[in-house]
Image (cartoon, rainbow, N blue to C red; front, top):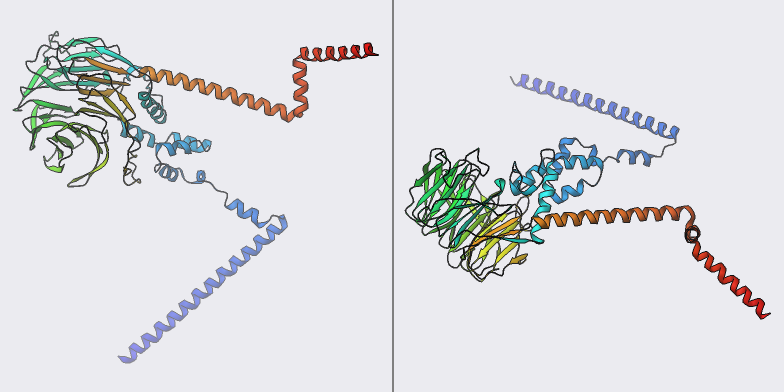
Length: 536
């Protein structure tokens, strides 16, 4: 047995040695072949008299455009809109790849959502425009809030206006307040379209989309109107049509202070310290979210809803009804107003202390973390209402002022490779614009379609119209382009003239174009000659 083991060991050693010898001989043959190829390449280069540096430079002359399109797309996917625009100016190939990149759709939708079918106020949306063109145009339009504006004043309410809502996709404006009447206006011309019958109590909240209009009363009901497709203004709030499109939802035990809609649900907040989630199809309450104080505002997004109760801010999971997180003592006094970005990642709150806070919401599987990003104190009175449309945050306060805050520097694109989406800022810029001059208490505000709409204690609805600023800026940009083109044309002509004849030819051309100057010089010489003869 021992002999057999020794024999097997000797055989295995012999086998290993033979394998090693064969591998070594194979490697030596491969090296000989490689040396032969190198010598052949050298002889070829010497015969063609090409330096080796040229060959190496040709080998290393590849660019990013030589990469596979899928890899280039992944590289461009890591850029923000400004960087992607810069890349599109490098070469025609990169211009085509960057301009047609799918990231432009993501950039647009994460800021403003999908473009509406019928664009407001002749914004110029059309199916033949690329996503890059839509993004650039909308980004340009957002700058009009720093331009000129006109103020339209809407009369009709007899008491304070507590809520305003802009439905930009239908060019409609809804207002209501202490007079218990919901009024519908045409947003473009400011004309009154219709008004509801008195609903019997103060209306503190209104919300709408193209299929449903809801209004919340202090008696605890939600009054609803279904849209009528044949009507150009969608809703028959006056009840003139024979169709029965109105109904009410009852379950709240106190005044309703805030309302919101999404595709499948209705959200309502009340001073009974609850937020209720309703099914739009079944018209039944699905969840009841209980708070510790009066609910002033709410802002839903996807499967979460943010709400303000007392001085605190809550984040809820609407599917399970569980509380994800709470920010205690967000403001000194009550947190009276709330707004949320379109992506749902950022939250804005306004309080009785006149301050405005900006938070980032980081969602995990089972909880949400809320981080304070920035704080502004633009008002001396309570911030009663907030509205957000990228990049502008608008606030209405008890001091009779509106503040416009550009938050684009605090927001970053939500690209997968960007990590944190917020630049941590210690000092923030003050509001870029303040609209004031009204002594009354401003109670509600909304933004949309190049307009800011506000209502207050005096019962008047004011519309700051910035659509003309867009036209003025567009004409100014066109004139700047014409001037630049003319300047480049003149520079090109001067270059061509200097390359042809130099400075002397330019002088001769100028002299030929102006013969009068030449005649004057000849006359002056003749006079000098005559004076010389007379002296002689």
